[in-house]
Image (cartoon, rainbow, N blue to C red; front, side, top):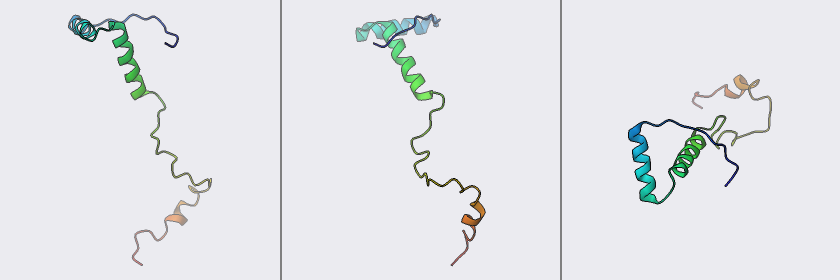
Length: 79
């Protein structure tokens, strides 16, 4: 396991009881379930995450925004 940091969390009594029941039924420590849940949560919501599709169509040109009007001229007109 990677290096860990100890922390304290406060849970509602009913959530704590359910966590303990799940841990018993899976034969795993409750702390392991909490670490797994936090890891899944932060992976899903990590700051700065961008969809893989961003930049997929990178042209390598730095002047596209300056040429936008020129490039879009004629769009929507019938030929």
